[in-house]
Amino acid sequence: MKRWARSESFSAWAFMTPGLVFLAIFTFWPILYGIPLALTDYSVIAETRYVGFENFTRAFQDHNFTVSLWNSLVYVLIVPIIQVISILMAILVNSRLPGVKMFRAAYYIPVVTSMVAVALIWSWLLGNNGVVNYLLIQAGIIDGQVSWLSSSSTALYVLMFITMWKGLGYYMMLYLAGLQGIPSDLYEAARVDGAGPLRLVVHVTIPLLRPHILFCTLISIMGAVRVFDEVYILTKGGPGTSTLTSSVYIFQKGLEQFNFGYASALGLIVSVIIGALSILVFRFNRKGGVNSY
Amino acid sequence: MNTTSRSFKQLKNGVRYSVIYLLLILLALFMMGPFLWLLSVSLMPGRNVFSSPPAILPTFIDFDNYVQVWQFMSFPRYITNTVIIAGLGVVFNVLLASTTAYPLAVFHFKGRNFVFTLLIATMIIPSSTAMIVHYLTIQAFHLGNSYLGVVLPAAVSVFNIFLMRQTFLGIPSDIRDSGKMDGASELRIFWQLVLPLVKPGIAVIVLLEVMAFWNNFLWPIVILDDPEKYPLAAALTYLNGQFSYNFGWIAAGTMISVIPIIVVFLFTQKYYMEGIAGAIKG
Image 1 (spheres, chains in turn cyan, yellow):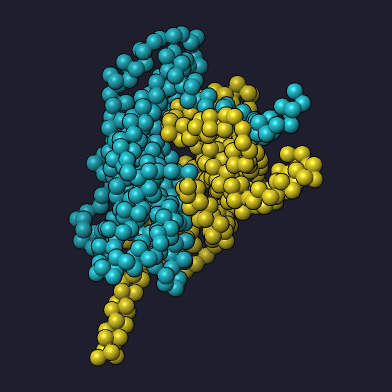
Image 2 (cartoon, rainbow over the protein chains, first blue to last red):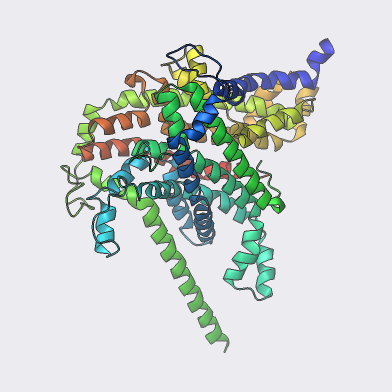
């Protein structure tokens, strides 16, 4: 007993216990408990009973849910756009020019600002009499005012744009870290072989950024499927169901209408979809050899 | 011959730099423009945001909006709430992440790989239901409507554990060995010898968590029944609902909530960005 108490194993577990207890309660437990919860009609109003797969069959007949899934999948379309723009931004701010660090900071500021503030600013800029309409009309791009956030044909795309705008700086920093890890003699060698700037990017930069591209793609897919704050603050899923994303719908069912069982079932379905998407991305990038940590 | 080719090269470089700077400036306008406009609106007298054509630059600057919104909303209280919540969150995260990461970096023990896999699995398995279960858990602990209820679900994150492990891996093993020679306990070695050496890692967690808790609005609204306990970002949504017509006030209120975090970021960006980058290194 005494020897165990002095062993490394004992100290290791002693150190880790507090952290693991918290993780168990707030990270592992929600994953596990979500499953039995999804098989019940748990809510605050009535007694809980076991309903089997009823929640799941109900989910696929629930028009709002299928619409929300579709909107979430549309949302994923911003992922490749974010990757392309943020890689270009990273290449730009990686140049050794005076003042370039100032620009890095400027691009990062939307990331550290709260979504509440960002959503407020954009909702004003995008208003009928707002700056965006004014500038676009002045530039002759649109003929009349567009109700960007209250028209069902534009609202979802506008939200996607705001998500992209806020996130670009974050991905730029991750790619910048990747760029700074590329040895400069690789560029020298390619230059000696007569490669121009474009070929350097395509044949040296992009292949060497592969692990970063995989990592960023994965986290931005998860972010896009889980998108909540901007949608909740700006449109609450409306007008109609045009911006109803799966997280917003799960939140409405769970924490606004207190249908915990049904919301858990919806959550499980979305989790399976995110899992499948992640595996797909991994397959596409099998050579990437990601070591996210 | 030599001079003409050199001046050609200079010209080419000059054009290249101009193009790069032009792109950098355009992007900066795109990313910063909305904030500058918010600043501009907050300094405009009256409520002329939606006048036509929209006011972009103030005709004259005054701070009335700031004075009025400060008098109307109890900013000191919301800021105090935010500081309490962020403070608790930082303490929990620093203590729990470093104690959990330390053995994973330096000890050899059975189960190490198991714990590691378990941690990585939580990042791959997403859980949209987490918030609902958190709500039930917090209510079961009778911590609804309390600061602890706001903080506990985010008291430790796998991300921070990996960040700290990364830092601990950089500590030379001689440090621990010398502590052992002197007969110090593991806890003492950790607290007095190792922890002071990982201050940069701790600083990164402090920064990340201060920002995360400062900006968090949804969970506090869900768990706190009493708006008096709201942190700043949550209070701001409240202000927006109440005074959606008074843009100057909301703009000033938003600036007040945004400026502290931007200032913190600008002064600490070096550590912050190293931390973000370090998290995805192998």
